View 1 (tube, one colour):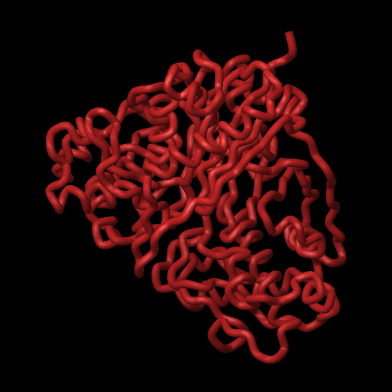
View 2 (view 1 turned 135 degrees about the vertical axis):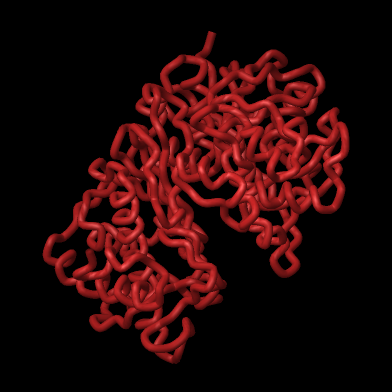
Length: 488
């Protein structure tokens, strides 16, 4: 009998991706479907019925390409903080409020105040787009009636696979206020917020077997009935698993539309600024600290629409004098500092591109790299171990010049995994959960395609520009002065 394949499903912002890999990490089959949302102002919704429909379509295409190979298990990841309300039967009756939907932003202060002591022990502050404020928004509209249940984005797909509602994983439940230390919903905090804990789902650790694929889902997807369905993690954690960053002090830096850092530590770091939060690791008594910025490669798409990025990169690499740049396109920053009033800037003015696109592009790329370095300093200041290897993943890793620039700014060696998709991370988790060894599964399934070494001379040359940006952040009151040059 042939060896089983492991399947990961990634519910992203713009697509649903399913991936099947063998026990050496080689792709056996894959499929994707586009996913659309609806944005109006600060609101961002998706149709939760589409999550299952498109995931089922992708899985059906994927299983058709397996050639009858057995399936070991399947796990699902999704965006962090995306929630909806369902009936007791698990059927959705509200749209999915997405991870960046800020309609409930004014309620974040109440959520923070009610659980301030717990959030401090967990090492973070409640933020405007997190899921708990969204639950309060539904409360204020009288939608938390008897029989109503909150669900997280992947729960829609896992419930459909199994055939009935199943538990949420603690990774997706973090931003809903789940107590990762006590491993329970904090009844005293919910009571202060006039929320009945009965509206919240059962929660289990990532890697827990939720159930098996039922007959209806098997007919719809081609997955064998009885296939184990494993509790997943958020897409940021999934990318970390796909990068193989599972040892203490190891980090994965994901540069896509935004910049996300995830690492491993023996205890949750405590950042007084509230920008750092920690998931429980799916292995051992470890934690996955990190944060997600509002800044990232999305600035390139916004500021240089339609540009030939290869040609622009080649010219930017020859630019020698680069102005200070904070490439934040929209309002507000969340990591490595929390500043709702933050705005991007280029040199002495707002973030905008003049006729000199080459210099502006170089400044944007360097600004992201500087912000990445600051993120590691904030993490270290919060008590995280940042001494291990760093892996780069995300769409921006297609730009080799930018990879080396970031490596030089950080001054540390960098690994580039061969397949950094979050769907692979879920395949790793599925394999590790069934085998009882998630790090071991990562060692088998994750392959490195390239490594980078920093140029110490270049690191020294780039450091003054980094200090200038951090000093400007401190001057504007966005970050503690201790991170500025000469700070305490």
